[in-house]
Structures are given as C-alpha cells and as structure tokens.
Amino acid sequence: MHKVVVLGTGPSGLTAAIYLARANMNPLVIEGDQPGGQLTLTTEVENFPGFPDGIMGPELMENMRKQAERFGATFERGWVTEVDLSKRPFTLKVEGKGEIQTQALIISTGASAKMLEIPNERENIGRGVSTCATCDGFFFRGKKIIVVGGGDSAMEEANFLTKFASEVRLVHRREELRASKIMQDRARENPKVTWSLNNTPIEVVAGENGVTGLKVKNNETGQEEVLETDGIFIAIGHRPNTAFLGGQIETDEIGYIKVKPGTSETNVEGVFACGDVQDNKYRQAITAAGSGCMAALDCERYLEGSAVHDWSQTLNK
Ligand code: NAP
Image (cartoon, rainbow, N blue to C red; front, side, top):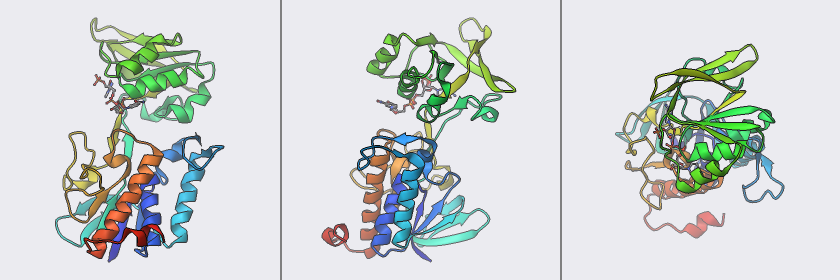
C-alpha cells in the first residue's frame, strides 16, 4: 500500500512529487501516455521564472523529474482505467498491471486539446494538422494556415501564427465569435487574418506530402468548398482528463475538477487535484506548478492527520 500516488507528470504532478518526496512521503508517480505533459510538445519556454534565457519545454520537464527522483519519488508508466474512491485506502486499476492501493491521491492528469473528429484529421497530425501553434508555427514560415475555432484560443493562435504565415484564415462554425472583444479586435485588425465564418469543417484534405486543404460546409447555403491551406491549427478548446474517475469526483459541466477555493481539496477527503485538470482559466506551467505545491502540502497535512500543522517544518526543509 502506498501513502500517496500522484497521477500525471506535468509541472503540477512533478512539483507535488518534489514536495512529497522531500517530506519523506515516498510518492509513487504514475506517468500516462504523455510523460512530462503538454510542455513536452512545446519548444522554448520563455516565461518560466528562473530561466532568463528561456529553456526548452522537454528539458524543463526532465529537470523537474530528476529533482523528484533525487528525493526518492518513484515513477511507473501506466494507464489508470478505473478508481474506487468510495472507501479508504483508495484503489486504482492500472491497465495491464493490476490494482494499486493508496491512502491519498493527487490528480494532476491535465487536459488534452479537443479535435474536430472529422475524416483525415488524426491521420494528418504532424503532417499539417496541429493543436499547438507555439510548437509548430515555426514550420509554416511563408505558408497559408487555417485556424479553426471562435474562442480566445483561436484568436490568440491566429495572431501568433501571422508571425510566420503569409495568410491565416479563421474558420468558425458560427457567425458570432465566442472570443472576448479585445481578442477579436486584435485578430480583426491584423491584416494577415482572413475569415470564413458560419462554415463547419467537414474533412481534412491531404495528399502524399500532407495537408492541402480543409473542406467546409457553409451553414447558410449548404454549399461545400475546399479552402486551400498548408496547415490546419485546431483551437476549439481543451478537455480535462477526468473520464477515468467515473463521476466519483465532483467536476464542473465540462469535466474540470472542482476544488475548494484556495486549496487543492476535492469533494472526497484524501483526494487532491492540481494543474490544468482543475484550472480552465490560467493554464500556465507556473500556475500548475504552484498548485502542485499546494496539493502536496494539503496532502501532507491530511496524511499527518493534524489540523494544526507547522508549515515552517515543511517549507524550510
Ligand atoms: P472556448 O472558449 O470553449 O472556444 C472553443 C471554440 O471552438 C468555440 O468558438 C466553439 O464554437 C468552437 N468549437 C468547439 N467544438 C467545436 C467543434 N467540434 N467543431 C467546430 N468548432 C468547435 O475554448 P478556448 O478558446 O480554448 O478558451 C477556453 C478558455 O480559456 C476561455 O475561458 C478563454 O477565455 C480562455 N483563454 C484566454 C486567453 C487569453 O485571454 N489570452 C487565451 C486562450 C484562452 P461555438 O462558439 O460555436 O461553441
């Protein structure tokens, strides 16, 4: 039986692991199918404090992992398919590895980019279809790009991509944008941004060398057309990775875990959440790391079963 299991190895999970390991809690950290989380999909990270010249995303995550290992955190690759949080110790079913029992659980499984789920989309990820402008924009220097979505992410990505592309076309399924006015204005004022509103994407068109177009259907006329492009950036939001919880932890209507404000506590005593899985608003590496620290301290206090915890002991170790 474990004292504490941390699910996920993004900045929140690894920060939680560093703090727990330093507090002699011997955390077991379970890495899913994307070790290091979303930062491993980015190139340079310029806004993580402490790195005046920036640091590559994968290197930052590798450093965090080494730091956790140095203090005794253990790591296991695995995919948690089911949990039983109705009684303590909690039980986690890990695909191909059986069951794990733990007194406390920290959920830091993050969020994943939503896809359109249209033909040829998944097959062409990395061949012109992307969900990350910061990671892949560089490859589209002087090329034509489509950004799909009508929210703040789409506006932000479109503006960002004009740094590289010759033209960025925003394709959105409705006439109205969901994005905030300031973000809309920025995109509308950008001379490199063109618009295809009220058009629903129905198929990615690709040849031997990757994406060549996006087939859309005009919602007013019903007419279909292929918009020529070299790349398609999908910016239609993220989905928190909480399906495996089977509704045992309280979430909002999208699936983000609800925590007690100002803490990492979920509705189940002994289960804590940190990082993007509980944050639809800030979604930054540094806020995720900060919330991972909170989860570790909350968890430590829970495991020690003491209402009056001397934080100076933890913080000054
Ligand atoms: P979002 O606000 O949920 O917008 C998603 C957009 O994608 C919507 O316009 C939606 O269309 C469209 N969409 C969803 N599913 C689709 C599908 N299957 N096919 C076609 N279109 C689809 O998501 P977001 O833009 O990622 O923003 C999430 C949160 O982060 C928001 O609170 C946002 O304000 C915040 N954010 C802030 C900033 C910033 O301030 N710098 C930057 C990025 C994100 P409909 O409108 O028709 O539903």
